Length: 355
Ligand SMILES: *[C@@H]1O[C@H](CO)[C@@H](O)[C@H](O)[C@H]1NC(C)=O
Ligand SMILES: *[C@@H]1O[C@H](CO)[C@@H](O)[C@H](O)[C@H]1NC(C)=O
Image (cartoon, rainbow, N blue to C red; front, side):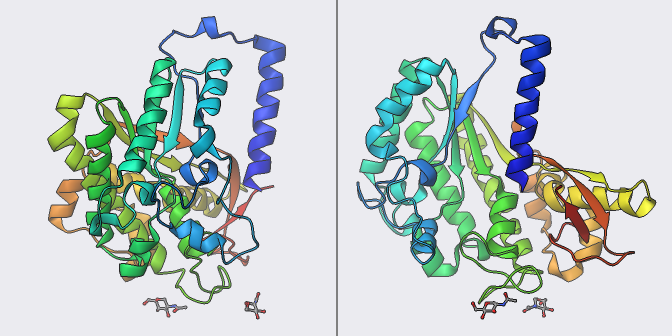
């Protein structure tokens, strides 16, 4: 549903711009970045080549309806063709992610895979040679299955060490050329889709949010988010201490930022729109800016929301050079505390209406 709304917005904006304004590249400074974006699992394929190990997505898709990323766009073999296409398009930036299990097949419990490093070196060098600036996402939804098997990946605080290690391997290998790092792409979607409604791996949830074999939708998303937020802080801390000064880059995070409007101009709906914003995006951004979760989340979730220790709060603060926003759509929010409705997302007891 979100996608449809997003597409309508893009098409109508295009219609509006082409009929009224006629934008041209020349109206933007040459340094303004226009780009394309991908994620490793969605394009690379070659899921068992070059010593790559299985990720959570390989394992998940292989138990579902037969669609998977085994081959995908075969970018692993056809990357040069893809990069030439981008060059023809005239873009000057390219945002892509690194497959964790291609670089570290066993996480921090095994060796760095030189074949994986070499693949991304070829991609980075080829785009730079065409005047395209690399923007690299360290985590775009995929985790080595090894870490799921060893300790449950994002459900365990162990993952913070693994993510910090993975990020450091990336800074060390690519940071001489990559100047824009994104720690996580849409961690709020990783959390909600994987642990609240169970649509993405590991497919965990509980009623009434979804029908999964395992999971707890009112508890696990908050544990997972907590570990992601602290993993972000760990990676940024490593970058700031050991790499940023010498490599001269920037590091940030990208959030799926849905905007919520009150359905009616009642106090209850105005408040629920604010709560939905908190439960969707300030959940991740407030800790990174201010060192703590939004107060409305703390009030509503009580002991189900983990807390930060004083040391963690210090580690967290101002851990951003930029914020990335993926904005697909705006939705209406209807209060479900003071009126009866079936909640379809746990955005602060809001019924989120996408039509
Ligand atoms: C939940 O899943 C089980 C097993 O797949 C199925 O038997 C059951 O009908 C489902 N329940 C609902 C409410 O969808
Ligand atoms: C989820 O966890 C909470 C807090 O521990 C507990 O009260 C609730 O019963 C659990 N729900 C399920 C479905 O296991």
